[in-house]
Image (cartoon, rainbow, N blue to C red; front, side, top):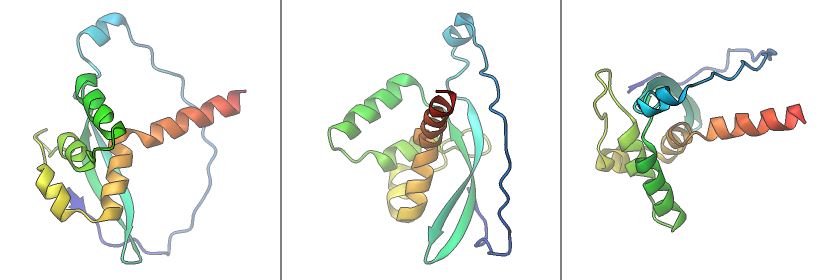
Length: 137
């Protein structure tokens, strides 16, 4: 996970209109073969620390249902599983775990942990799905 220097405020924000891409269709054989599990995606995580905005490039592995369901169940019972979840999902260039749970607990700041967890958990995807439903109605 390479941390970029703080982002500068010289960038001007531009709003672009993007069409929603058509949903990808899967066959039952795709799911049965596990094609969705352990996929690795590159993500740039943006977060604030000490008044500056930072960005860090990460690689996130999709965890199988049995793993996420267990973590989600424990989280819903009040257990803090954030560091464990992050440590199981972040991988290095060779697909091996990048951090231990202890490294996440001791080396991540709050802003970074929250931003990474949002990507790992899929909060962006949930938000996009909800927005799509409201715009179609």
